[in-house]
Structures are given as structure tokens and as C-alpha cells.
Length: 389
Image (cartoon, rainbow, N blue to C red; front, side, top):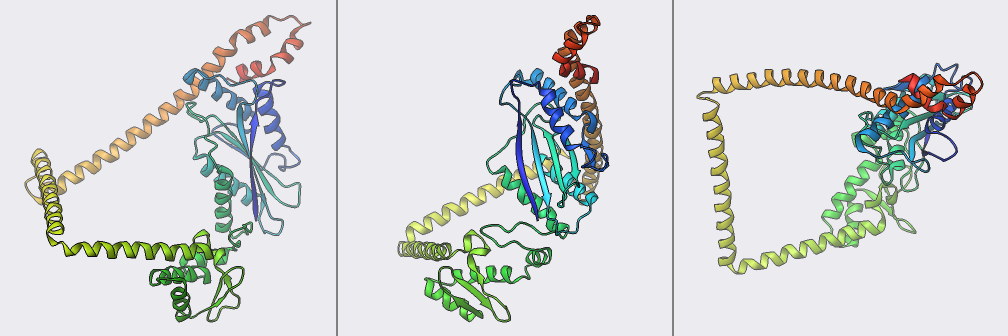
């Protein structure tokens, strides 16, 4: 199983932004825990200077949006911890790759991050710290409601794909890889049971009809605190609630009742057929509306064909080929432009950092031997950011 946590790294009044980020990133890059940094990597930044790149992105974000990073309680970055079970056969390199996939998927490739895999404990675990500011320096990460739950689901899926166990949830029993594969193909006991429950609900007008239909489909029913089913050849009963929220005893009953209400409504609509004039008028109106829509579509198509000078199927095929060539060329041009934009964005990020810290750095250079160290200690973050930029 892989347990995941999502933590916020916030600013505070006692330390500079660069110091806070440096402390966190330096901790996860510890030599003893990462096999002398062999299990450390980064995205869109360098592992050794990730904290300075994070800060530079925030400086450009301030220039673009006009919002300054608060000195207290502003989210600077996010820390993901992904811990694997000591019972899982997983190598440090495999864990590192799974961590990178998780980071890329969760941040959608829009945030700089540094990742380190720790091997100092019985359970291998990943630490991922990603910048709250996006790479294009225009937005911040949206820590949406239940983002931790989404992160856990992503991690569970990656674990299953790599034949690793997942955490047993409260509502649905955890699956190992084989069971998950069978479920994906629709061959597991659970997936078959879900299909049969859905089918029996459709043909039942009440709960008794549903139970009768399930028995006819070869299921043994056990009732108590929770309703459970067992198919022929199945060793144990399966509680319906383990199939998901739609399959609890209360929700199965609610689905049957809802279907019955909808059915009665349809019957009421059939009664309206006693008044043929009203229905006939509605049908004629709908038919006329559809015909007008078809005529408009045909007219627009003919106009487009005439404008494109298409007089035969050969002309049509030729035009499609021309458009395909233009599409490929346009995609290549967009790719080149995006690469240029990325280059200029990086330059803009560092120019903004230089411009912001230039005055401090000039004062630092003018300091004499007696007060230079004191000045450096006070403005270390700004000085390092300037030199890095």
C-alpha cells in the first residue's frame, strides 16, 4: 500500500521565503537518505537550486499579477509524501519513477518540483515539493476541495499498475493487482454482481421483486445489518455496500422506488394519448422544426462546398489532404513558438529577480570587511537569488 499526504509550506515572519524553501528542500535531499542524492531529481529546475527557482517564479508572478507574497501564512509550496508498504517488493528506482509520475499527473506538468526518494527506513517513501506558483508565473496551484483524496486515488492507480497493494478504504475493500485487473475486464465477482444488481433493479417494481430476480440469476441472499450476495461457485458472500455508494441496501431500495415513480409518470403521459389532437399537433410541430433544421444544415453545407470550389469527390479528397498538410505545419509552428515563449519566460523570470534584488546586491558589494558578513546574514536570500539569476 502507498499512503499519501499533502501538506502546505507557508511563509512566516521570522524567515525569508528563500530560507523557508531551502530548509524544506535541503531536508528531503539529505545524502544519507537518498544514497548521496542518486535518488533526487527535479522538473523545470535544478535540484541543488530548486528553492531559488521557486522564488524567481514568484517574483515574476508579482510583476505579472501585482500580488505580493505575504510575509505570513501565504502558501509558498506543497509537500507530497508517498510512503510504500514494507511488504511490497519495490526498488528505490521504481519508487522514484512512480513518484515522478504522480507529481506530473497531480500538477499537470504546470509546476516546478523537486523529488527525493528516502531509503533510510523499512518503508521506501517519496518526498515531492512543488512550487505553488505555475511555471508560466501567471497563476497559483488550486488546492481544491478533496485534493488529498484525488492525490490518493492517483497514487493507488499507479500502485495497481505496478502490481503493488493499496490501502483498504472504509467503503470499498482494497484490491490487489489481480483482482483490479479482473474488475477492469469485468470478470471479477464484484463486477458481475454489480451488473446483475443493475439488471435486476431495471426489471423490479419493488424490493421483493428485486430479491426474486437476484435468486433467479443464481444468487444466494443473506440479510442482516447489511445485505450480501453469493453467486454459484463463490466461496464467500459479498456485501453490497463494498461495491460502492450506489449499492448500499438503502440506495438499492431508493433506486427501485425512483424507477417505479418514473414508470408511473410515463404511464400518466400515455393517458394523454386519449387527446389525439394535442399530441398530433405537437408531433407535427416537432417534425416541422426538425425539417427546418435539416434544410438550414444542408444550405450551410452547400454554401461551404461552393466557397471551397468543390465539384466532385476528387476535389473533396484533395481539399482534405491540403488541410491535413496545413494542420501539421501549424502544429510545428505552434511548437516552435511555445519553445520560444518558454525561453523568453525563463529570461523574464531571472531579469525580474535581478531587477528586484539589484539595489541590495550593490549595497552588499560596497560593504567593508567589518559589516559585510552581517549584511549578508540579513539579506542572504536576496543576495543568493540575485547571484542565481
